[in-house]
Amino acid sequence: MSHSDNHRNKEERAFATKLLHFGAEIDEHTGASSVPIYQASTFHHHNIFEPPPYDYSRSGNPTRQALEDYIALLEGGARGFAFASGMAAISTSFLLLSAGDHVIVTEDVYGGTYRLLTSILDRLGIETTFVDMTDFEVVKAARKANTKAVYMETPSNPTLKITDIAQVTAWAKEHGLLTMLDNTFMTPYHQRPIEQGVDLVLHSATKFLGGHSDVLAGLAVTADDRLGRRLKQLQNGLGTVLGAQESWLLMRGMKTLQARMEASERSARRLAEWLEAHPAVERVYYPGLANHPRREIHEKQSRGYGAVVSFDVGSGERAKALLSRVRLPLVAVSLGAVESILSYPAMMSHAAMPKEVRAERGITDGLVRYSVGLEDINDLIEDLDAALRGS
Image (tube, rainbow, N blue to C red; front, side):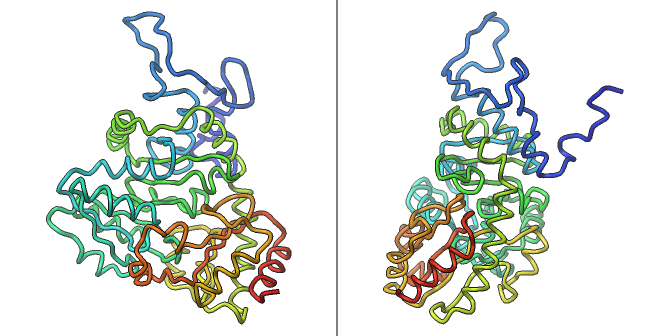
């Protein structure tokens, strides 16, 4: 029995252990405690008849490969891919489809995904139907003869609606449909969609995976190698790859994912409960609240509720006043960082969505989204209370 046989396979280890012991954590050549940054665009062929494993960094780079193997391990998939941004990962994945194909998409999807589908892919002949995925009958009714894929986001952004992943993927498999899921909000720590039957998992790794508001990146994981080969061809052909420096930064951030998510979620639960009782708040959206729609489905497919809380203060005027008064969170586009971030979907993440479409999807002018960071929760509550009361 080899030495390695005495230890559990890395796939079987606990998540916290996988974050630190993922296969490339020690450089095999030097013993360095960090993956080297291979800041190289091309690689020498020592023997022209035996090409090296890497030949050109668009096609493959050792630093990026370490990251790609890392996210595949965390998601429990066959192959991982690192892209220049979350939208680069999403747009590359949608190009698995061809002109004339139709895709069913979560209605309150991220604004950048909505923009891609309605202003770029529609021009290329890829058709989209946006549906309320909390209603399975509506999902089934949207299927057409040319439907090829289903794209989910759960919890959705920013109203945190819950899709029953296993129910949708089982139905999709019956009809030979590709399933894709944006797992940015939950991360593989809280939610592992491949185990629920999803074919392709996507992340804006800029958010919780990177965690420090300092790297722009996207990740994708395929459930099987066949789909992985197709996505690799697209990644290489389009050149939508992540650079070596960003790959290293992202791996550095991912090592603390569990510790960050646990601390942020504890604070998010407290914030959501406090907001529910606040007189200036009309509605709170958070899967951990007892009255959150389909909470039991979320609990079936996720091990936690995440760190994003959305709430409605009743009007655009009040929302803008709140954004101008808070002192602790960044008022910014993005989420998932060590510092709390307060965002205004109507003018930020979902500005690409027409006002009437936003209104249909519950994204009102009074809705704000709070990504809870690692500050002391009492300080965050005190700051938000003062802002809500106008003091």
